[in-house]
Image 1 (spheres, rainbow, N blue to C red):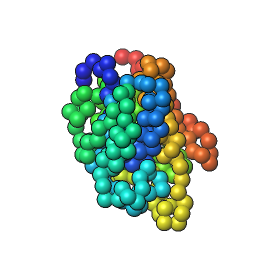
Image 2 (cartoon, rainbow, N blue to C red):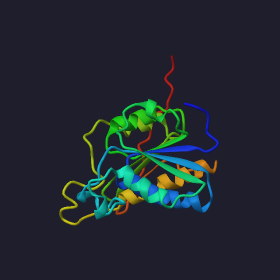
Image 3 (cartoon, one colour):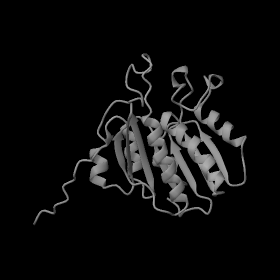
Length: 217
């Protein structure tokens, strides 16, 4: 990875519930404080009708690439401070992040998360499920990050069947808020969130304790 650019490059992987909400929070905030930044959005998905309601898309976006919809929205509000670029492809290789200064990963699979976890630049990993949220970052304990990233099948930010019965839950919005706050503070070279886990119904939750005891040789 290269040294930090004078106009930092923030890559957001995933433009679903968490990713699209993060963009919607972050870009206006960056423009408000006139922070220099280039945002790169990476996602190969197209907008579907089932995305509406918990992702930042409209009926007019159905069938279009998610990254194109978001870049079009914010490029039309362009200024000299924040630029946005869409890459309509899945994240599968660290080579795709070679120019990034910061990375936000908000996908529903463990494999791309683990790739991001190997980076030597600041990153944050945003997750949710129903009303719950989970946030880990490059400042979290590596052992904890590994333990909290087991193998699993792709999981939507809404529990299975929830949308069909009208039980849309907003854990994705809390995760996105952490991501936007983290990115803003990183770009400002200020202290930023490290990790969090909780539920709107049950409040803040505790992470498992890691065994850091050093065995005698």
